[in-house]
Length: 408
Ligand code: ASP
Ligand code: MG
Image 1 (cartoon, rainbow, N blue to C red):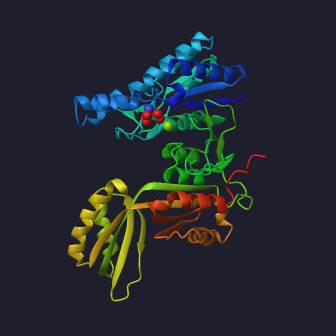
Image 2 (cartoon, rainbow, N blue to C red):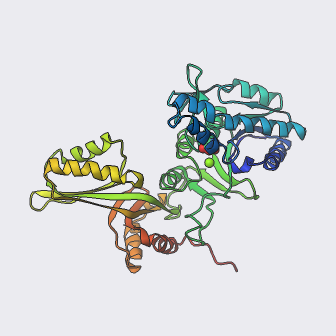
Image 3 (cartoon, rainbow, N blue to C red):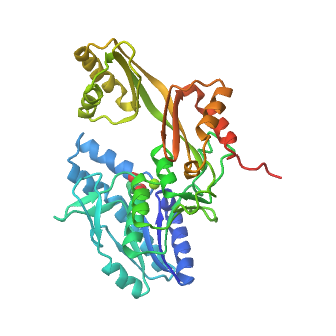
């Protein structure tokens, strides 16, 4: 008998029939003797609908009121799921975030969970009830309703599992686990049985959208055993786990990529202290995040400086740089928003050399030019022309032995 926290996403509760199916599933776990806490998202499309509705009244809705409006999506689902459970003879109680004291800071729309009071949930579990909690929402110290950012129900699930010291946190979604890469790009992509928190964090921040990044950070910090599974098919899903023996870890766990990148180069800036700080300082003041950065060794007392930003910030970053360039008397500013970032990720590379050269050789064999490179302990990323995305990802997936075995 275990304490299990399950989270069901929007598609899993997208219709009355699906809500009934979730209730049946929860009931089966309950019948097996487990204590069950269930976190639900709003029905699919509901949060978008509420945001649109708010914007039809006020083009830039006050943040506090927007949170009040969008938190209602989850409030509907908790009630419906609890009714469904009661209907099939499984006692249940629904709670909003504030009713179970999911205390957050007051950053509306992207609030962070500070504390959860689990007494009330424990009482219900003791009485044999299933506890159904609204995802995505909390309450600040003054009683204001807050929300946790898009996809935030994942974080609610993990946070509740941490607070209750649950045996497992199961995230039910519309895919059956975490894949070696996006199966839409590489049909041979495989579901991973296991992936470490660190790898998952890299995969998530590189664009694999299975889990909200914050939920993975949370799970890693509080060591919550986390599993991603499909709500529509039976299967073991993917366990997100701690690194055990890295000598035995596969070299590479996955290939991630991000299409939302753009790069900017400023050429011929003085090669002296303070220049990078000035360039990036102005970009930072524009509220633009910088990802990769490359600076060349100066030859004639000047140097070139290249960095990448989110594609949505490209025009703005370019404008800022034109101004900086004048200030610094730089030679020119150029940019390219037709680039992508591709990364190989794996804790196994900590204890094995040669991953980078294998990656570069694989790309070279396909005639793909590498424009930028960056590395961390468990990841190597390159920037290439966006037209090579599919080719590059497929070649790397196969070169690192990730393709699934052909059906016998
Ligand atoms: N309903 C919220 C959203 O659509 C939270 C979630 O589903 O995780 O972003
Ligand atoms: Mg989600």
